[in-house]
Figure 1 (tube, rainbow, N blue to C red):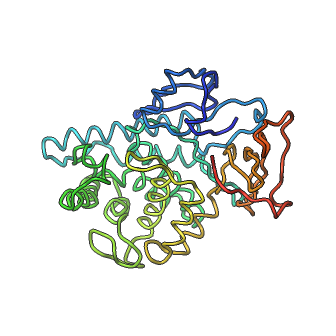
Figure 2: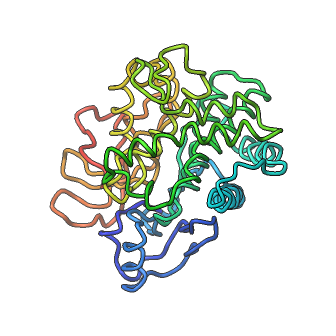
Length: 360
């Protein structure tokens, strides 16, 4: 299969990965043949990339961190909890949610069974969802990324569960605001932005009132917008004053937000997002945590369509965990625009004069 931008998709292409609704249900499943109506609708719903079947790349299969069933169950749980709290917020109540902590510990336990626990595994989030589902899918992605970093840090099971519950619910404070406030944050007035920043304290208050949620998990909600140099909010904490769980969630939050399409901007590529993280080392984030995090992120994920400096276009077929910026690329189009009659591969580890210039 190969990952392609929606603008390059054509009628007759078949989906190789499902597209999800905001609730975690499948909108379009594997094998669905696309037509003009489907393509137009997907564009309207904010889908910018899809995975399609291609005989030349049929053996290239990106390893998603989460199985479809686990993602479905996780998004459903986050959606149910957050929409329930949204309804509570209309009545201005912050009431405990029965068994919230235990339910989300069970949920993250399921996620943990699928997280990479080896140093040679590169994280790839094969995650295609409609724009209205961003808040819910984002929470699951942040939990996955945070969990990977927690494992890399050597956290024990209890620490991982505290981190995982906090990561799944770190944005729960958003539920007290109308969705038209947080869905278009690029166009907010200063007053609206100040109001929205209160979501950290609102989330903390929601979680600390849950009898079975650790206070350290609640601090993921409170502190995930604090910054290493003290320029964050709500308290302007700096360095070690910020709990490490919250620092991890902050890195995962920013990375997934950057690599997701938003109503007001295009998504960043993984390489661009990693550059952003490094540029903010020891300013927004602890540089050592960034270095550890980026060891597990594929700059050019398997199945990505890329253009080389030679003018050729290919699909990433393999990523070496030790040299993530020099993958093996299967060429599907020559520099003159002609498709290859028989696809072949270039190992960028062996051809140092060949580089990737952009992800398509």
